[in-house]
Length: 74
Image 1 (cartoon, rainbow, N blue to C red):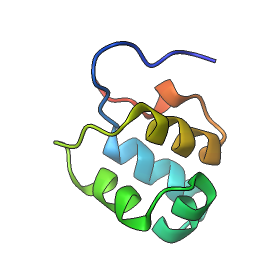
Image 2 (image 1 turned 180 degrees about the vertical axis):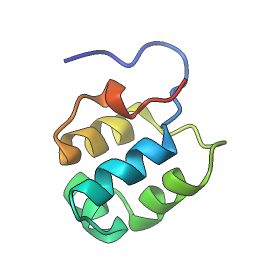
Image 3 (image 1 turned 90 degrees about the horizontal axis):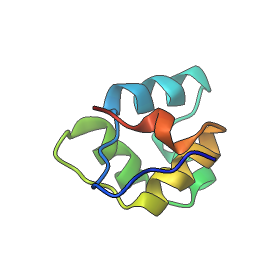
Image 4 (image 1 turned 135 degrees about the vertical axis):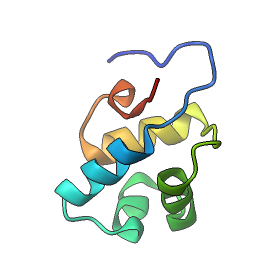
């Protein structure tokens, strides 16, 4: 598994939305699968200034069946 790194990560919100929609998941469904709140998923897709916890990124990636680094932006 790839590591996330030392600096605070930022999720690529468009990538998160795209991956969620490709899997035909609602915000609520992805949140339930990842064990996070639906508000968390919605906020991460809408705002660029959010720095999610690394464990949140790992949970979302696991629910989407991808590596955590695939969710990260520049």
